[in-house]
Length: 296
Length: 259
Image 1 (cartoon, helix red, strand yellow):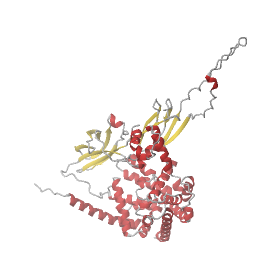
Image 2 (cartoon, rainbow over the protein chains, first blue to last red):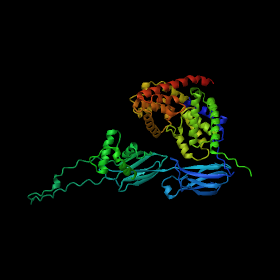
Image 3 (cartoon, rainbow over the protein chains, first blue to last red):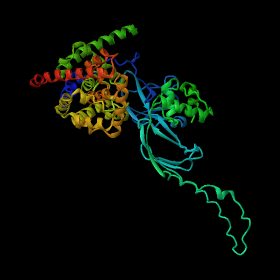
Image 4 (cartoon, rainbow over the protein chains, first blue to last red):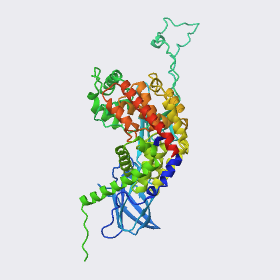
């Protein structure tokens, strides 16, 4: 079967005259007026959604044409042009730069007397946002973090404990190294009572409540440095159980089975909504999940 | 003043349909000549389904020249339908993403595909053939082992079946593959550990979309006919159908070699 084809078999098939036919399977749309027309359509790489308001430059041998992609269609219409090889580049506005990677110029050969439309795809940036909390639910500030791949970035968390990096959607996984700040100084031991003057001992001895506080158990040694591997994927819409669960998991509440999901929902209700007798039903927190997760 | 020829959309559609039918006929001859075993294993209607599926996916990737569509269909026969989105073929997605919009994109994809096939199957396909023999030697109990962990032990099994293919996959690709295999096995009603392992093996050998690959109609039929059955029954049906397909393929092999 074809699944056991070797490279020779495929190379042989590629040498067939039919396999080298350059005629289009469906006809290229000829320009009705016998002119060569050029358009460039700007779309997102992952969804094919059109991108308006970006400047598209078509360069042919140093002569540049510039048009802005239209709202609704994403088309930059250059009108009548000379046929030949064009290099397309895209200038992103500050707003679009926050959403897409810089566009690497592409070439396309525009044949004579056709209504030619090039499709230029912009690769969106994904925003990786992680908020770190300690065991008590307090945001961890002053933790330094570093990412080497897929983009080089580093920073230190602020009061919100937020790590935020723009990563290309074509590299959905990577490593994040986090170095936690030193824990606060150990609570000072109770001040010992002043040494009594053996020549003049105080009587009755002064009582200090701190002297009766039991000694603290030594705390676990906190992690100083961790490397997290992450994977970015599109999250389901928050309109069904899959989307709600995905958000709950992202917020740190596991949903590995029905019982754990119920416990997680109750925990969410307790922590986020201060409902101490929560229903444990996912649908009851659907709106809150969207608010808490999607606006973080 | 000359009269302008007006071609209405309906007429244009008819012209395109006619062109597609002509292409399909040429492609049928091409497949029969260069893929004689697939042509013998599949009925004409099934071959036409393979060709139409390839035309559709090639068009979605903006490959419009007849020669490009022809070679794209050749690649789907070797690598599976929709191979460009298969985590087992990471080079394809990389190539498409890095060079999208460039002239010569198809040639790059085709060259990369042949290089990949040479690495994992060899120039004559011997490595892939050995993998099929190893798969044929597996009992149902081994292929659908209920103790399978869908982790290390499954990966060890895949490595044993087709080591050349396994070693060209990065750890991250293999992890993505396992996640996808779990999802697809569940979708096809084979989510328990044994059936899931069998499903994973078939994905590894035949492509991640094997259960809807028109070149492998036996897989879809086995699942459709047992749509209401439990996972173990579905696994058994898929195993039997797969073994039968390998047997028919192996029986045809000497004759094809002689030709």
